Image 1 (spheres, rainbow, N blue to C red):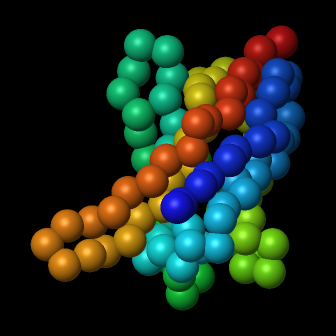
Image 2 (image 1 turned 180 degrees about the vertical axis):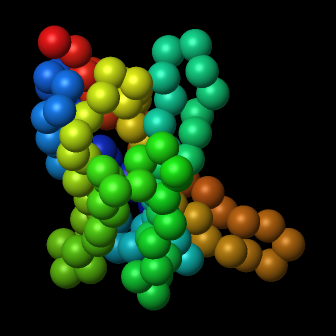
Length: 119
């Protein structure tokens, strides 16, 4: 069974930083890629960043240069370092894992962690 548990969210002032963590079961870390998505109030869930099993990364344009995705394979943990936070970064941040299958992909989500940017 694949399990993803996010943590590290909270209330932070504009310009501040946070590090989100996603503790994954061993099977989740064998996925083709893992990533972070976010959903702001009244908006659809959107892509933030992904990292492949080979370590390649990709970011949404809105977060490039401020967010860094990384993974610690020994700890089965995915991270998202968030710097220079803006009020528009306020959202629930979700961890996602995906494995390509024959005829279908297998997608797993965590429960989310709230990030609120406000003075």
